[in-house]
Image (cartoon, rainbow, N blue to C red; front, side, top):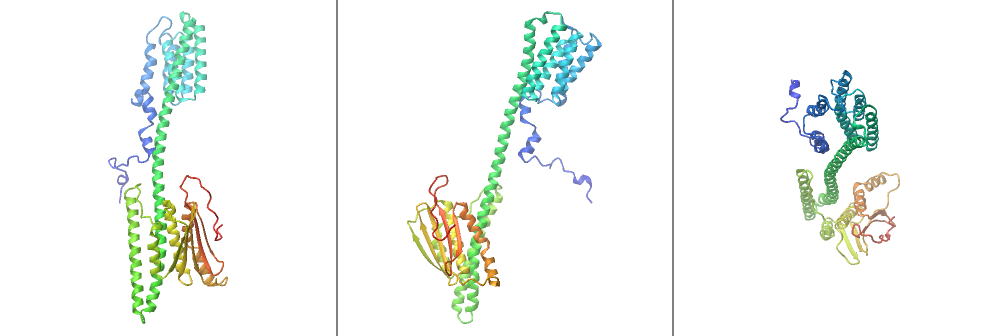
Length: 442
């Protein structure tokens, strides 16, 4: 039985932060590391240094102020000033306010003014660094006025002249400007880091999206291929079983067609699986499956004819190279339409008409069908379920992906007409809308 120790992760095998946000939390805020003067020091030392800066000048007496031993009140106020700098991160406004109050009272009791002033400047810097600019400016202005008033009221020395007031205001202003500059630099670095992180995440998500789109296209191609070849196998297996007793030659031909169709299916499935495996092996790397186009139409028609579907192929207009996406969609639409004609047609024949227009190519596949079954009968339900298959949905999605229109409907008469209108304008280049289909396209 496993103990609790067995479930604890070994520090040698502990997972490193994988995502950008986890790495950011693990490594700390780069803005703080770059622009805080004490950021590279241990935490305890970051607090000790400001406290020593406040306590150090309180030891010596000056011409215009005493030291911490001047009175118990002075010593207490020195401790308050030293303690205020410890709040500069967690409660900057509270710590700075305590330092200002201690400074005003310290001037009144003849304490070490330099220590009080250093604590005030550290507090003003912290307010400007961590709080909004409006708050820091208001606080700095109030601090300068309070210190000037305390100096005029309690200090009997040359410090109460105009030059001293200007110098005091300059010290407060310098501390405010330094804190604001530090905050601005940290925000700038943080913005750069966030943009880089978002760019990295966007790049990863874009790669994953492209992989998903490629796999969806492969799935559609696989459906189109299987639908056609399985229809061929099904048809010729029936022919072979009927012809085997009396017409062995016809049965042998049908079996040969079945073998060829099965070999084609296995080859195509193998190539598509290789593409998927290559994509998985490369993580976010992209592989490209073979893309068929209208250049392969002749081989497709020969394949259908071998399977027993006679296709009358007609072309209107001047054939021309199509955009890659339109070319692939056109081929798959023809394949799906002829597969439907082969499976559901009444006389195993179909008419394929390609019309190369000025700004589009129109594909029309027409085949005869049996009379519609009586509504409510089992045959009607079977026909309805067959017409709601994934092939037609996939064809609509393909046509919609290139801004085309597709119509598949029965009539007029005992025919089924499959019409797709595919714009041939290059992406991003405006052009006239394709003219409406003459076969009842909506």
